[in-house]
Length: 451
Ligand SMILES: [Zn+2]
Image (cartoon, rainbow, N blue to C red; front, side, top):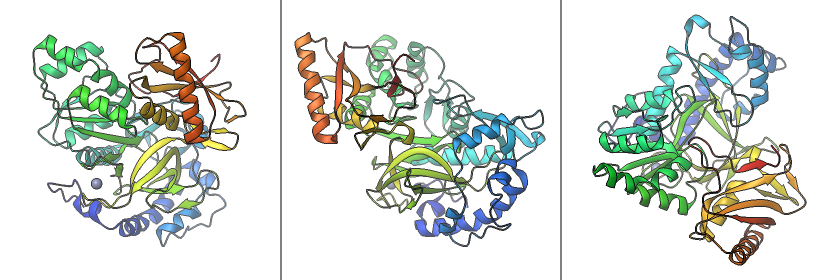
């Protein structure tokens, strides 16, 4: 099934009705389970209470399998030996594993995953499909701005760019001023960066143009790695700063495949592009019940790889909390379109009300555009704090220097707006311009006092 066409990377699967995609996947999941059980000590242990043959006759039967949690994967990793450096979920021999990748490690120490030559092929094809959906083509010169080859967004992304035939310009890792200059000199037509780094670049793009004297050829911008493009204000700032209208959000998961979701030309939510190798479910994070893919639905995304040899994942809980923007699309793709609204782990509870830091950021960024930067920082008193019986402390960054009276008035206005819109109380501190940290990789919206 590699029917490349002008509009799609894999026309057959991308345009097949979603129920039929799930039927096609279900046929492949059953034999996979038997193979994984034979090869993975972790899954043998997790599935000890299941019948010898788990019957997956339709997609919904996938729910017969238990979830795989990151802590379980971490424990399996800790059981590493010389023969099995990837631990108890290493399902291929070292002889057949050709690469390791680390998950980004925004929480805890990084986890390592393996790839066989076949897995590399699966990654490259999936990531290429994702870039194709995001509008990249063979004639593009792409500035790849993730600096570390070993992270999920490193080498696999590079492989994906090359697979679609684009010209890879791997500038990530150089100092920012050099990145900006070389992008002009190499006539880059596209870039991929984290959303916060994209925002940062957009502030300097014009100045570099004047300095190098090379007119911008940039036309396509792909951002992701963290929530942010949900927010109109952030989108507009990146698009206008870099002088593009083609701005697409992309997303993957290091533990599964690093590039699986991308926005099409509609730019309204990310399509799933890994259907040839990975099955997805949406679940209620509290009950674990499967939630139907329907417009307006929300839940945590669960991934099942059914064509991964070295370190497979069955019903892996991503902790990514998604909003389903739509099912079906004017572009002809049938996969659900989502926005990632935050990490299940980031969810805070103020007197019984759920709130995601990203939702706070989106609200404040849109209602107070021009007064505050579309970034903020939420303070917790302890790493594992989820519940708040008192107003949640939030730092925002002013666009212009303010007097203390102006800052007080702005804090109060934001506190009132958040209470009215989200039924959550916050205590806002307005910081001076350029006080919030901006990272080239991932920016967490949550900080812990004293940490
Ligand atoms: Zn579409």
